[in-house]
Length: 325
Image 1 (cartoon, rainbow, N blue to C red):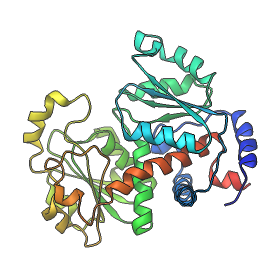
Image 2: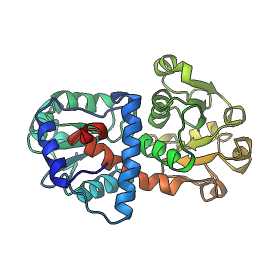
Image 3: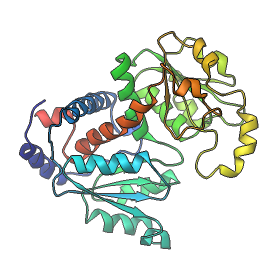
Image 4: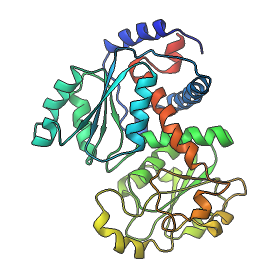
């Protein structure tokens, strides 16, 4: 794919006159579009590593709305927008009218009238849905209590880089049936792989989503059966943001759900390990695994930058096939 900064900016102007496209879950793109997006992210990463300058988003702005704290999300989006020639602004609920009770639809109308794209990291998924409904520019879900689709873009990109297509493979998610688990479930459908979920009783994922995606998902209440022969093992912290007071209770419930060397030995010999971070060593994962030869965690974290650059480009300018048109 070869196109100039000027050509990309012209396409961005055309895209701006269309109905905005949002990215709230992986289901907002087709499987074919997601495959294109991953390929584009890998291509953009290679260009970046070669110090090539590509700034199609010059003079454009990204509003970053944060209700939840963040390391990887903020750094990756802010750096990514800068590398694409644009500008990003950090907006916390403490510093804006959002934190003082302004209706979401009012904030959406105002903020979207002044920027080119918005990303939101918040609690209820209904918040990003409402914001997107009233926004005149694309909206990205950078994490809600229900979904974390940007992380899965990086995860799928990382698997492709290391093992090729994940289609037809088996992945195992170990831990709480939380936003990461839900996004892995969506990924199983969209990228055509099977997902085993190992969760303690009482911590399973959303029942409606499980019923909807049941053909691609198998639920286990023990870790050994779930990981048997898997090509990829992934996990998350036992207590997510907002659940800190449950830490001690969860430690008891999840004590048999640590991904350690013995667990990895039950997986496929060529299996890789992922974690969305931050990680609590010797809780959900052993130090030997996260720092071991099967771990791709650090590349997975870096790939948030590249996957999200491809996403920003896709939403503002167009998907790769439209860029070539």
